[in-house]
Image: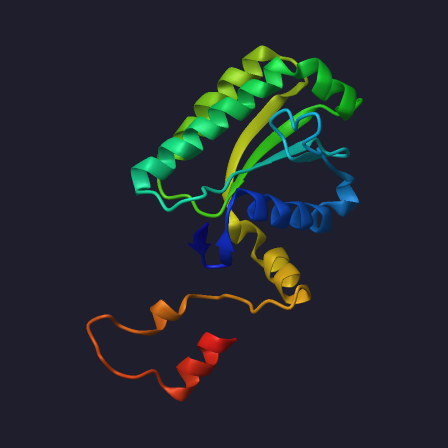
Length: 188
């Protein structure tokens, strides 16, 4: 489990939250969840109207910046490869929809080389043709892209909204007590 500014997550809890976010944010685009039985084929779900596919990733442990980049890069590579491997199965679920975007959703991005890798993979996937629109894009988004929906869901669940961690309220070089205001904010 990792601590994010939106709360603690592991792979399963992150995917569960993302599914609720996608169902809320993309309901008018006819979001369809790709239940992981018999497999998700490299996408958690997709929109029928505009061909946006989503894949979630959350590490189960805290990693260094380089380790996190490598894990995210490898996840993008592996799951985009599934579009080719499972093309026929995905096509049966997409119907007439072609994929125009594949969005990788992760709590945080710590290295902009991930964008470079996404661009490289985008060019590779477009070359495959497949169930891919000719203007297909690979996009990387962190939790902040879905801040409103995450906070709405957290509020509906009765969880406190996390705007920043309590650690941000104190300066580690100072031994001052928290003010009443800071304590109240920390509790919210």
